[in-house]
Amino acid sequence: MSKSKTATGLIVASAMAAAISTAASVAPVHADEMAMEKCYGVSVAGKNDCAAGPGTTCAGTSKVDYQGNAWTLVPAGLCDNADFWAKVIPGDRAGSMEALDRDMAG
Image 1 (cartoon, rainbow, N blue to C red):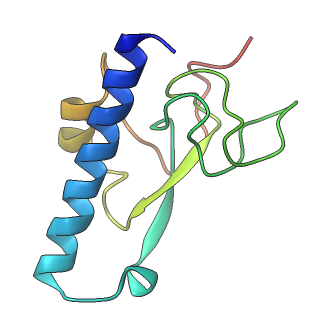
Image 2: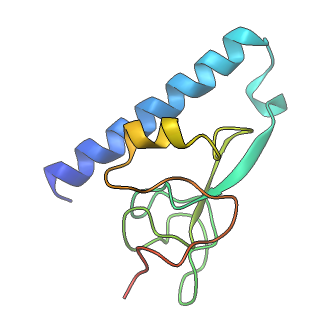
């Protein structure tokens, strides 16, 4: 894995951890009680939670960064926050509650 992908993955993971931490400090709940939602197009390659399209089986099977048909669980309300994703995902990408037709594995 290239240093660029590793750095991007760490940035996304750090940002998501910060968002979860902030949400937990606002309303103290256990992690397993926190409302989560599927967010498409925000995972780095091999780090999705599931649904990585045809030819894949599930978690960890996305082939490219920000693959549009692969989702990751994020705290409820975060997926639609374009300002958040603009800070952690390169380009004009953002999370989506629906599968996307961008950044598909070849």
